Amino acid sequence: MEFTDKYVSNEHKEQHLSASESADPSSVSPFVISTSPKSPRSPRSPRSPNSPRSPKVHQGKHGGSVGSPLKNQRHSHSRKDGHPKKGGYGGKGTWGGLLDMDNDHVDDPNDPNYISDKEDTKFVSKTSAEFEEFKKKATVIVEEYFVNDDVNSTANELRELELPSYSFYFVKKLVSIAMDRRDKEKEMASILLSSLYGDVIDPQQVYKGFQKLVESADDLIVDIPDAVDVLALFIARAVVDDILPPSFLTKTMAYLTKDSKGVDVIKRAEKGYLSAPLHAETIERCWGGRKNKTVEDLKLKINDLLIEYVVSGDVKEAFRCIKDLNVPHFHHEIVKRAVIMAMEKRQAENRLLDLLKKNRRRRSN
Image 1: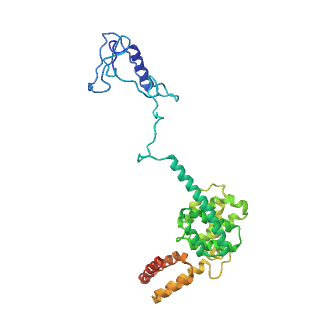
Image 2: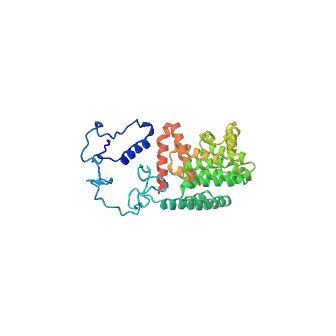
Image 3: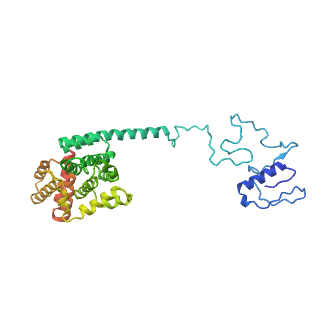
């Protein structure tokens, strides 16, 4: 921009220089404005006559605009007076705030990008209330299970809640209550988890439930003095029962604080139980077990009926044996054992896969 006495007043020159310095003080070169009428014009690039920066503003006697295209501009009816805002932005000779917003702006609910804060708040409140209700019902289901010892009834009640994303809390509540009960309830809790795993409770929810238990070890030890040892045994039992992967130990240990009781739980489970000779047999019978109901007994019976089926090829007899087990929520173990057997005995692969297909159709009907 160039300045001459003819077109620009001293006030405008000072404003321009002040704005340049405030924009970048370090980049201001020693620029001298000459008021001499003979001072040469600096070369400039041609501008379009339609450019908003190109029109020259002629000053009248009192500094008013002469021939300005804005001379007929009407005053705005806005209540805003153009003075600097209370926050310090805006006003004469300033650039204004980078994030200046119109306080009178109202979001349009019909805008496809519109997100209502009230709707978000309602969703969070609804989710929180939903979870609290689930916690109450889950606690009742656990207490009833320890009274009636009915796996099928417990599975149906949990499924009827239709909130599978909160199942981790059921796992946590079941184990934490059992930890403060007799060995009978501890064994019942382990059997229930193995029975519900996969069909009623998603594996990731079981994993998360045990994570929550380890994280709360410092709180559990207040009411249960031997909480470290008991919880370690529950984790070891879950690993042996194939409802927790062995990697659970190392992955959970990685994010625990060093002074946490959860660290002691993981170390105890790994070195005190899972590293011992014949640890599987010892852990499976750690709480005495129950006749014809232990997980190990169920696995053996499933393995026997699959072997018998491979030899005889009698599908009806295989289904009868499965029904006699009376563990409809333990069918994931049948699938698992059948797949392992098919991989080990290639000649029985087709027959075993055929059994799984027919069993799936039968259950869906």
